[in-house]
Length: 51
Image 1 (cartoon, helix red, strand yellow):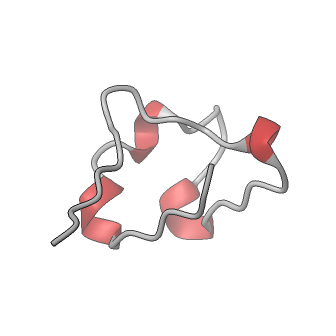
Image 2: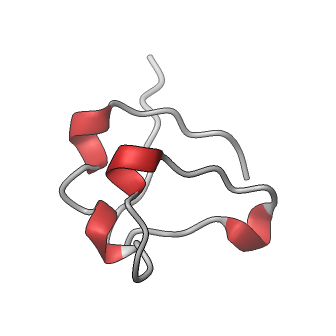
């Protein structure tokens, strides 16, 4: 669990995959109040590079 911050261009093409009918996530944004409200984008994952 943790906060993921990304750029708009990294996810905008996949946002429709998690939008519910009537939602305008790209226009209105999205805020999950708890873990149950979070939405996963199928096929996406977070990776961390350590050097």
